[in-house]
Every structure is written in C-alpha cells, then in structure tokens.
Image (cartoon, rainbow, N blue to C red; front, side):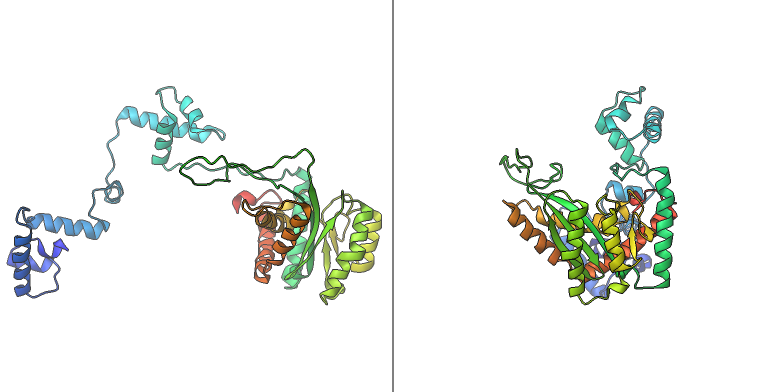
Length: 368
C-alpha cells in the first residue's frame, strides 16, 4: 500500500506512517519505487497524512458520493431548488397513492419530469411501495375476529398441543391452465421469442380439491366432482376424511375440526355428523368456537397451503395438459411438504392471532 512507502517524512514524524519493515528495508523500498515510478511525483508528507486519516474515517479513498456524504459533505442547493424539493415532498405527503408523474403535476412552480421527481424523492429519503390487497371486513367482523383470537390463544397458552390438534380444512379450485400474472412472468433473451401461456379456453376445465392440515400431517387431497353441496360434503367426510384421520392412528377425541362459513359446511346434516364424530370440538360458523367470517388471513390453508401448491403445480416448463396430470401434480406437491414446514405454519398461525388481537380485529397482513 502506497501509504506505507510513498512519503518523504521527517525523522520526527515517521512513527505516524505504519510500516512493517526496518529502516534499511524502508529505504530500499523507496529506491525501488523511485526507479519503478520515475515519471510519477512522490506525494508530500501532508498528502500522505491526509489520505491516511481519510481512510481511517471513511474506509475508502475514492472521491465517490457515498464517501463524501460519510464525511458530512452536502451539495449546495439554491433557494429555488430547495423550494421545488420542499413542494415535491409536500405533494408526496398529502397525495393518495399515485405515480411520480401525478406528483410532478401537483408542483406548478416547476416543469418537472417524472424522473426528476423520483430523483428528488429518493434524495429526500422517500421510497416507492406497492399497495397491498386484503380481504374486506365489516365492522362487526372485527369483534368476531377479536373474540376468536382471544379464545384460541387462551387455549393454546393453557395447552401447548392445542394448535397441533386442530384439523384446518378448506377447498380450492385448480383451473387446468392456472392463473398467471404477466407482470411477474419474465424471461431473458437477446431477442423476443414471443412466448405465451394459454390461460383462457372456450371450455374451461378445473378441479375442486379438499385438503387439511393436522399437526405434522397433510390430510388428503380429496377431489370433488363439480360444485360442493351439503350431500357431497357429508359423503366426503364419511368415506374419505374421517377414515384418513383414523388411518394415521390419531385419537379423534383430541381433534378440533376447523372449517369456514361455506354454506355446505353449515348444513344441518353436516353439523349433526361432525357432532357425532368430534363431539363439541368444532371450529366453524356454528361450532363451539365461532370461526370469524371473511378471515382468510387467519386460515393456514389460505395463507400457506393453497398458495404453495399452486406455485408448485403451475410452473412454466412443466404444465399439466389434462386433469389427470393436474391431479398427479397436486398430490405430488402436497406430498413434498415437510413436517418442519408445518411446524412453522402453526407458529405463523399463532403469530397472526397475536397481530389480529393487537389490531383489535382489523386487517394486519400489510404489517407482516
């Protein structure tokens, strides 16, 4: 490093310059560098000291903007420019979600381009954020969500295995061609290959799938022919869901059966059967613990399971060309879920109960 060698210093100040060699070696290095760099002047003592001190302060020797800001340097801003920047920041604070072009139009004192507006906002610490989408909830829903969260958290705090004994259930629809967001499906190429994904068909094909999460196990998937009705749901419970739970060797007397407020779930014949199997351990629209309506953010099947399965099934390079292959891919995707993943899902469920309770039943996902 030239700080060690490129200096002509007085003997009284040589202890300031760090070096790892004797004075003999020091002089030899100086002679070698003089011969090697004949056309380059040797820096003065003050230059070396200032450079060394700057390196200690900043950790860099380049005259880059970040180093200059680290030393407290600020660019000189004219009064007019400062007035424009203040107006842009004020427009960003009071405006609803809008583009940089709209913010520029709100500043009449200058003819700003969108790029200049973005630069001003970035320079003043502003960042662009996406507006999230959440499930609409009504005022009465907040009370029901609060009541549900407090009830489940109280039981979970009293019994550490309570959440692991809940069978979280739900249905989801899988179209053959899936749903794709073109803004996130990209490919890199030197030329446009004009790739496309078929998402619409004259005769749409789809699968209705039921699946459940019980502890470290996935129950199902079970496929439903057509629209789910109370009779179909009852037959599904009797012939597939309950027998599958028994095959795991889990005592039904410890299981809480969770379902949402789907009309087929709340039918009298379904409720009677669930009462006969799970006694009063039902979490649902008419269960012992009331499931709050419009609360997919609290359901593990909604905030984890279906999103994971669809992201695995609907890949660009391996697409199902018929419903049978789609069934196979769904079964394979669910079979790949590890117990450690389901443990984190249960922890996330409890965390979401906490967030919902702290927000007094209001939406909380934007804060996650």
